[in-house]
Length: 640
Image 1 (cartoon, one colour):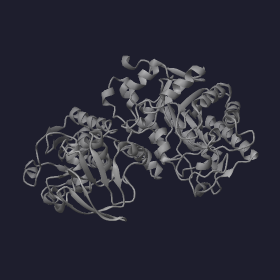
Image 2 (image 1 turned 60 degrees about the horizontal axis):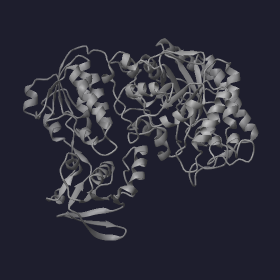
Image 3 (image 1 turned 60 degrees about the vertical axis):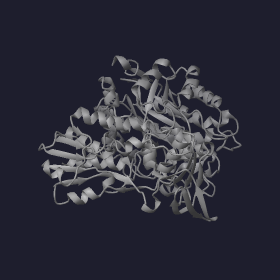
Image 4 (image 1 turned 180 degrees about the horizontal axis):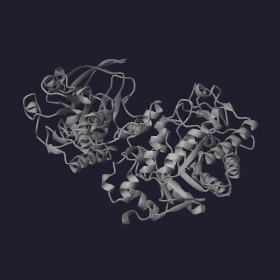
C-alpha cells in the first residue's frame, strides 16, 4: 500500500466519503433488458467491480427521458417503474462495500428515433452527417421539460439508493451540443455567447441540486476540449467549470472529445496510440480555478500512473473505464501489493468497437466481461492431465485457466518463445503497449505452475504417447503465400515484423490491418512503401477509432495506397495489377504479402480419433483475432 498511499487514501465528494480515490467511469454495456430495466447480468457486472475495490462506480448513461435514449439495452431512469431494478443494483454494489452514482444523460441529436418513436431533439437542426436525419430544434418549452426531466431522474436516483449522480455534459450529447458553437446556432438566450451556450448546463445543475439537497453529491462531466475544427476553446470550458461549481456541482469530471465520429471518439476513449493520462492537461487547466474536487480520466488504470497524477496535483481523483473491463480487481490487487498481477488494459478499443456495432460490451483479454453471472473460476471436480499444443494467446489462456482450476497442465510450443502472432502484433508503431497483454499472460501461466516446453512440436505420434486426459489444440495459423508469388524478393508481413530485411522500395500486397501496420513499420525505418488493396477502402478489418487515427497519419507518412486494385501476377519484384485505370506493372526491391492467414489444420485432422477429448481453439479452426483465441481458450478450460 505504501507505493499507492494517495490513491488509497479516503476522500469525500459532498456528503459521500469514499474509501479510495478510484472511480469506475461510465461505460455502455448492452447488458440490460431491452425495456431499460436492470437485469441480473448488469447487477453481476457492476457488483464484480465493487468487489474489485472501486471507490465509486458511475453506471452507464441513463436517459432522463424517452426522447433522450440512444441505446436499446441500457439502464433507464425516466420513470418510477425503473426504481425496483435500480434499487436491486445499488443494494448489490453496497453489499460489496462499494458506492454508486447514476449518470444522468440525454443523447440529444444522437438519440435513436427507432427506439424513442419521436424525432431526435437538439439545440439546432444540424444533422450528424450529410444526408442524415435532421433533429428537431428544441422549443423553450422542450428545454424546460428536459431540465425538469434531469431533476426528476436525480430524485429517482436518490430514492433508489444511489450515493451520487453525474450530469453528463460531455462527448457530443445534448448538454455538450448546447455548449458547442458548431452545433448550437440558436439566436435566443440559449445560443450565441459562451454564457448563453452554457445556460442549459447550469440550469440543469441548479435544478438537480435543488431536487437532491445541499450535500448530496452532484458530479458534472465536461468535455474541456472538443478536438474538432470549430470547437470551443479550453478557456470557455474553464469558465463553465467555474460556473458549474457556483450552480451546485460537487465535483468536476474533466474529459474531452466528442462521439459524433470515430475520429472524435478516439479522443474520448484514447486508444493505444495516445499516451496514458491523455486528458490530464485539461484537468490541470481547470483545477486551479475551482475549489471542488477534479476527476481526471483517460488511460489512468495503471496504479503507478494514477498515484503519480494524484501526487503531482492535476486532479483529486482518477476515473478509469476500460481498465475495469480488463481487470475488475485491479484496485484490490494494487492495495494488496500485487500490482504486477493486474491484467493491463492496452487500449485496443475492441470493447468500444463492439458497442459502436450495437453488440454486447466485451474485452479482448477478459472473457468474463458480461458473463460474471454465469461463470465462476471454481476448482475442477476431477483433476486431469491436460496437454496444450501451442503457446499463442489461445493456448496461454487455456493453460492459465485450466491450471487455475487445479488441472495438471503442460504446454508445448514449437518455437523458442511464447506468444505467437501476438508477439508480432506488438511490433508496429503505436502498438507497443499491446505487448503488455502478452507479458501478463506469460507471467500468469508461469506463476500458476504450468509446465512449459519450448522447441517442442506436437504431432499425431508424440501427443498420444503422453496419455493426456484432454488435449487443447491451439496450433495457430500461417500466412497465405500463393505458390505463384514465390521468389527471392517476396516475403510475408510476418517475416518483416520478425526482423527480415527488405530493400528501400517496398510493395505490400494487402491493405488490411496487417498490411498497413507493416507499412507504418517499414516507413519508420526509412522505406518507401506502396500498399495495394483490392477493396475500395483501407484497413476495413480494423477497429474503428484506431483505424481513424491511422488514416489521419497516412498522408504525412509518405505511404502510397492503391485501392480497388487487384493483383494479377507477381514475378521477380514486379507486380502486375488491374484497377479502373487499367493494367499496370509496379516494381520494387521487395514484395511483402499481407494476404491474410490460413489455419494450421493438418494436426487437427491427424489427431482426430487418436486423442480424446480434443479441443481446438483459435486460428487452427479459422484465422481471426486474439480475442477469439483467448475467449475460446477460456471457455474450453472452464468446461474440462
